[in-house]
Length: 294
Image (cartoon, rainbow, N blue to C red; front, top):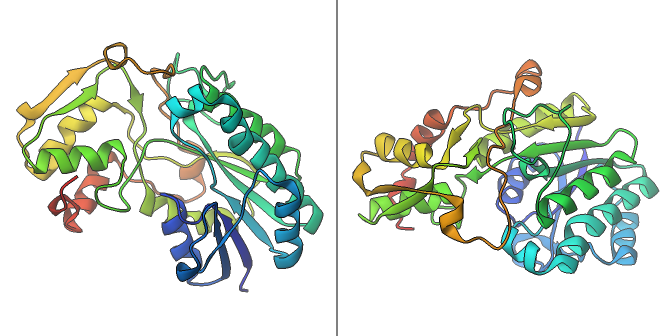
């Protein structure tokens, strides 16, 4: 049965591949803050509750997927009110609108809801964010949980998608392919996640009508320094161009949690297969991503 699905934030890094995947078997409407009529994406300001409710009443989706967010962690630290408006209030507006029309809500969240003290976080571990971005995303999770049957998808450190995208892995591939140095943090551990695999596996979550929290991330947990070395190894770049550094040296505005590796056992038990980082890189190599300079 074809479902009517609304994807909020369809023009984003996760949104584009998920939109393309779900369009294969469903009737999908995509939105973005700016709107891209040429690509079939309507304009929607999720901070405007009346506008969101009007949109949902007009489209009456079976499922809504909320990917809209400000993900620039330092911007969120500097502009707290903007961060809260989009990442928290906006998510609440979408959740309330889903309740009005009886739509199931699937909301994308982040590993940054954790303080990073222990790593290997499961869905049941207590959240304790340490920056404005993580705090706003946790508030969004609480609003989403107020809607019966909702699903919260936590992910981490996306890569893939568009070559040259402003994501660590994509940029590292671009720089190393150009013979440039890459500075990577040895004190930050993440679960790098191939966005194409999130899109390919997302229909499983819908088919099973999953509700609750699920970690949907790559199956490897490694430091960003080790990730950069693995990039050099898989693509055949000079690993001497990878230089270790620390978060303290970077002078970030916002604190970063040191270890936010995600335990993906629940997803694996549902039949969802997320690649190791090495396998994900090999897939990108086969697609020729490294030939585009970052």
